[in-house]
Amino acid sequence: MKKFDAIVIGSGQAGTPLVFKLAAQGKMVAFIEKDRLGGTCLNVGCTPTKAYVASARRIWDTQHGDEMGVEIPAGSTLNLKKVKERKDKLLGKSRMGLEVSVAENKNITFFHGEARFTGHKTVEVNGEELSADLIFINVGGRAFVPGDYAGVPHLTNESILELEELPERLLVVGGSYIGLEFGQMFARFGSKVTIIERGARIISREDEEVSQVVQEFIEADGVEFRLNASCIGAKQNEDGTITIDLNCDSNSSQTVTGTHLLLAIGRSPNTDRLNLAATGIETDKRGFINVDDYCQTNVEGIFALGDCNGKGAFTHTAYNDFQVVEDFLFGKKTRKISDRIMTYGLFVDPPLGRVGMTQEQALAAGHKIKIAHRPMTKIARAREKGETYGFMSAVIDAETDKFLGAVVLGVGGDEIISSITNVMYADQPYTLIRDSVQVHPTVTELIPTMLEKLEEPES
Image 1 (tube, rainbow, N blue to C red):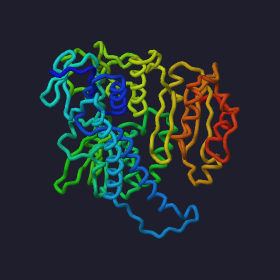
Image 2: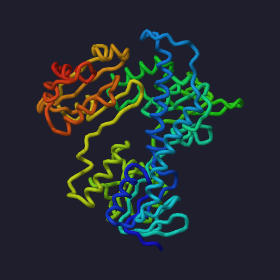
Image 3: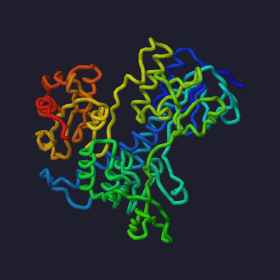
Image 4: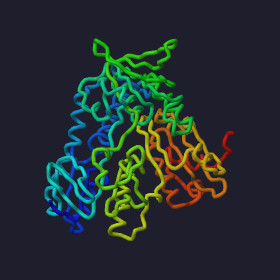
């Protein structure tokens, strides 16, 4: 058995910086990765999908030139093989940098293989047993595939990025973040896209207005939505196409047929592959590892970071997990998971930036609230850009005058939201930004204007 000071399982956005931090502190570290260095974000998440979103935007620009007085000859098409090649080049360069840095660090021993626990503080990989007093789990998650779809050819967020030919007709099961991003981009690429959702509206965790507006502008790109699709099931036809049943009631059966099927139903943690029973680590009913405010499991010396602990599902929350653990091990132990304010983006076009609570969540939590709201149609910079879909809004605590949450859905929304996020972290009232002077002409300059008039929420 090989003895190390620490074992890090997984090379995602928490595990990778932690490995280098441990090594810099003189720790001998075993670094285990079953796939490619960089984890989900680099290989099959943020980096590749946003590269595809950029290509989709370029082709959208060619199709909307007339609106801006630019005459572009008809006939622009997308070469998916070249889009994929560009993506692969971007990823390859980033992975190469990681591989070199790991290989050159004398305190890091890299193991390419799948790890599983064999005992309380022992891990097996490629037939070798490793042990350490400190073990960090950063194994991420994967696309959830229900048993009903196991025998039907399907794509996930990973495999769809390997296509080199454009799907003629793409069926997307799931009307949330992943399904919407891929649905819109492939519609812009040239596929006929249908998004199928069990619920009455898409992205149900957002306020209803967000769902409505996002559906509106994605429909403008040619995407068809099928909502309230109960009893969804799929089958492969003799010609290779795939048919989805949207309702199993024989009196009202509805179907939709496509050439490709993308499952975007949800994510499952990769914890089921670790043999956690050998350690006594506790998980919840969905398989996420239970952790405290410092990413510690119930087993002393074992931590879980990133998507597998269920405390966040984003690259930025995973990296913050690293910061929390770094501070716990080598700092003042003042950083905690519970201190962070949830913020994220939906990278459709135009994008959504979200921070804190929705209006519905704030009311459910018992807050007395006031609402600020402004449509993008009333923002000069958005009109000048010819991009007026969306709105910005904020939820204010009526008793403290502090932000409870905000959303910017529209051009630049993924970047603009940080201005409100920063005020929330500073724990300052909304008047701080209301009374500020912002650059003109920008979309951001209308946030102070929006905040000049607060209203009671509609009952």
